[in-house]
Image (cartoon, rainbow, N blue to C red; front, side):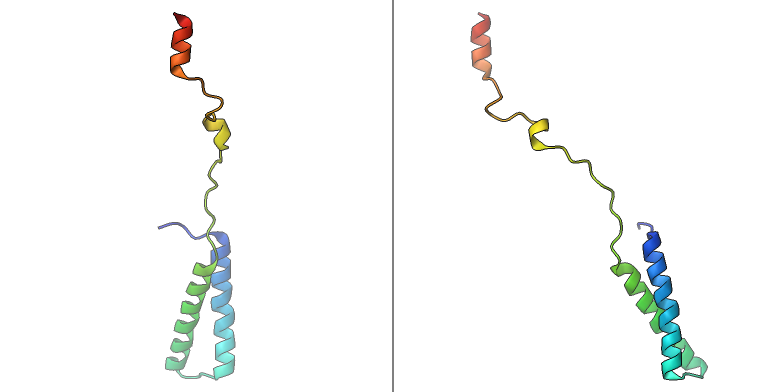
Length: 86
């Protein structure tokens, strides 16, 4: 399992904190069950937000196709080079 990036941790944590405060203020939950439901929803929302942030992928070195393989026009036929040696 890949490690989360710093951006994923920050966005997820901020989402949990801010959504918990907003839901507690808006719902007026005072019982333990209400607070537990709000906390569970906030954690789920924070997890979804952190997974939505794209993870950094390692950059692959790109090589131009012309540099790796010569084009057919640049290749010499094998038979021509053998006939020239005789």
